[in-house]
Amino acid sequence: MMILFVKVVGVLFNETAKARISAPYNKLEEIQILELMDSVCKDDEKPGEWLRRIDIAEKREKDSRYLSLVYPGGLSKCEAECATLSASCSKLLEDEIDRDELSGALWKGSLKLADAQVDDKLTDINC
Image (cartoon, rainbow, N blue to C red; front, side, top):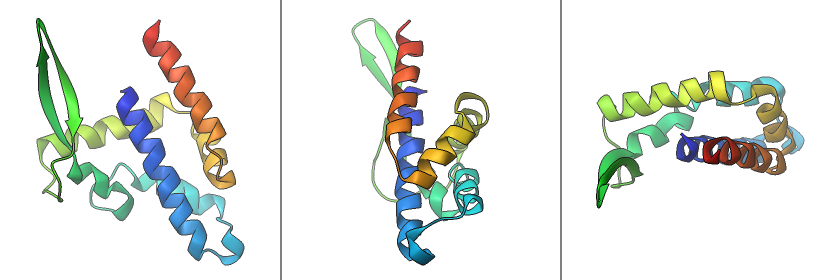
């Protein structure tokens, strides 16, 4: 879930930076940021296109197996893996991330808050 968290936040910051360039006075309205946050987990919308670029692969090391996200290149049709990532992304934004804090950081264009949330997630995972 941590890798997905970092990916989603990264995509959101990139998308808001792109939107900010074309916005009047380089300022985004809150509704624009919320719309980006709502569309980042939807594969059929531009901000969610990243979902169709990722595959889920099983990795094996000695006696353990785990899943990894890999980037084979190009866009694919959204099938089971993409749908799984999309559902996980939506769950992450609904249940795991403080949307108000994240939208505020996106509005400010500040990674500091996102870095703090990443640190909190790492602490939670490592405990």
